[in-house]
Amino acid sequence: MLLPIVLALAGGVTGAAGAAFLTTWAYLTLSVVVGYGPAALFTGFGLTVLAAGLLVLARNRFTKKTASDPPVSRPVATATGKADLASEFAFTAAFVLARYLGEGRRD
Image 1 (cartoon, one colour):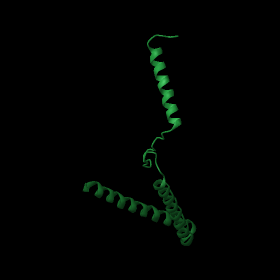
Image 2: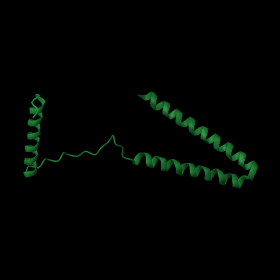
Image 3: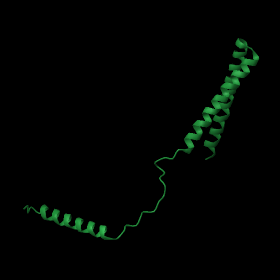
Image 4: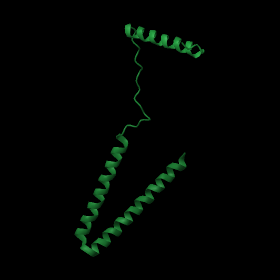
């Protein structure tokens, strides 16, 4: 149980270090081409856009309702009345007719 947590933390720290090195590389490369000020601006803008995209993705991912988690509801009790009585008569008549025709006696 502890091993997956340690592995996840190690992966997170390693990923953060990799992202830091890539950010430093991007800043140093841009600072040679465009100067220190614009390089810092472009790097900061790029990281801000990346963070906003990840937040939007996380928000959409965790707020969607899935079909595997349907809302819990109680079944509605059936009404007893004239319509229900008519349905019982129709079902009984169809059932008797089907049994009658199923025995080979066709009229």
